[in-house]
Structure formats: structure tokens, C-alpha cells
Image (cartoon, rainbow, N blue to C red; front, top):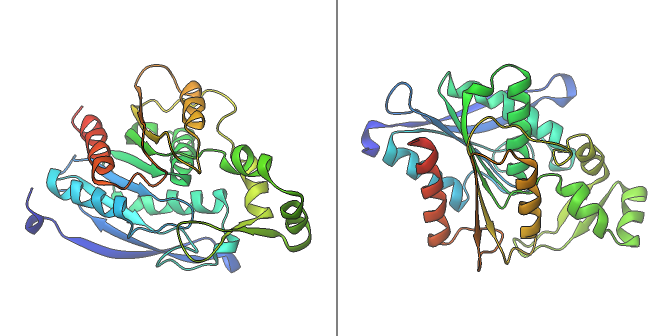
Length: 266
């Protein structure tokens, strides 16, 4: 599909009420034909819609005639709001709101890291609203469902626990940028209310998980546990022996594209 036949546009929508209103920035690529699926990018913690995988997702959409929706959560990238106000519930609310930009097209949710958690919660929310059939598949890249309670809380040091109580947050260095990661008490508390690894996660659609076995942030055992909560059929787990957390190398992008092809052409 030629790029010349598909135009993207910038959008911004207001989410929330009163003092919680924030403006969410999005980029929408309309599908080439009616009925073609819309690929929805759900980014990770402190990432934005200009990252390598998000850009490659839109490239795939242009080549195949799919639509593509990329957006930034509040406190991320081009969107408004304070990062420290962010919680899973808040970012889920924003994710639900931006889906209005896709019309009635079938959806493929593509979640990276924390975005994998958001994708699963989004699926649950759509199912509760009677809209589960809107989603034709999920592609989850190094998914981190329940990372606050499963990965962060068990590893907290005494100093970090004290900081959460005294300051309402703690910081930790990250190899992905010059500024430290900030984790708030509100994020951790809200995470407990959004757990998905507590029972069967019935997506009702195919799920393809890509997971690096050398991921220092989300151990591949976490992906194996996620699989155990998904119905046995329609789930594919690809373990990448030398893969890291980002999975942004050319060979990783090729795997993402293959997963997308498997779902969009089914």
C-alpha cells in the first residue's frame, strides 16, 4: 500500500473532569479501506509514541493498509498532565477515550511493557461494556502486567519503603535515560486494584507475546506466568534467547511484524 494513499493527522482530546482534565495527544492514520483493522499502540512506562516500535507499527500499517493509532498517556510525550499523577486507572481511562478516534474498525492492541498491562485491562473493560468483539487480537511485547505488585513491591529496599511513606514516591536509576524512574505510592496502590494475574484472562481473541530471555526489567518467567492465566488456545509465546527489554533491534521488529501479520491476515 502506497504512503500517498494514506494520510495521518494529529488529534488531541480532553479526558477527565474538573481538576483532573488533561489533553491527550494522538496521531491517527486512517485505514486504506473500510473494514481494515486499526492497530493501537499502547506504550510503556515513560515511553512515548515516537519510539522505534511505535514508528515501525505505523510503517507496517501503511504497507498493509491498516489504520494506526498512536498516542501518549498523560505526563508522557506530547500529552498534558503531570507524570507523577499517573496511575494504571488514569492511563486506562485515557486509552479507552482515544479509541473513539478509530470509529468502528476492528482493533489490534499492541502493548509494550506496561502497555501490555494496559492492553489486558483495556480488553477487560471492553468486554464489560459488551465490546469484546471489537478486538481481533493482541500483540504484547515484553508485557509487564501487575508489575507494581509483582516486580516492584517485593524488591523494595527499606529506604525505598521509607521514601514512599515520607515523600509519596521513590526514585531509581534507569539505563534508558538520564533521569531516574519515579514510582509513586498512588501508582503502587492503584496497581493493586488493577491486577490481572489473579484468575483467567479471557481475551476471546488471539494473543501473541514476544519476550526476551535477557530482559533485565521483566523476567521471562513473568511472561510464562501470564500465559498460564490465558486460555490455552489462541496464545503464542515467542521467547527470544538474546532479547532485551526494548526488543527494538531489526530482528525484533521483524518478529513484531510477523506477529501482526498472523493476526491481521487470519
